[in-house]
Image (cartoon, rainbow, N blue to C red; front, side):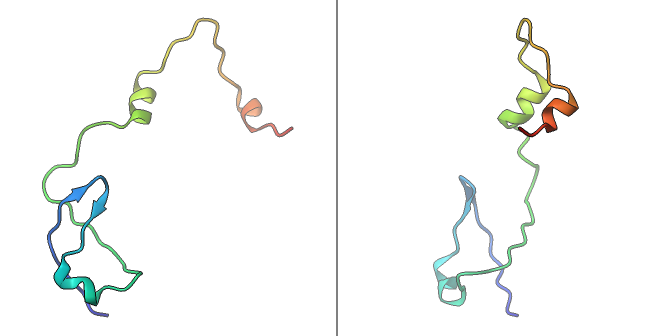
Length: 71
């Protein structure tokens, strides 16, 4: 297996393969990411809601059995 190494900026979750390697890359590849610097500390929407749940008057969460019940 041939390996190719390059540095790239990730934009909107997309890694651009440099033009000089395009002829060497097939439709399928194994990718290993080695992040440079700190992880993005911005929380996503799910993490934010889990940390700060919305409080709704009269709300009662489902029980475990109700959550798994099939009808």
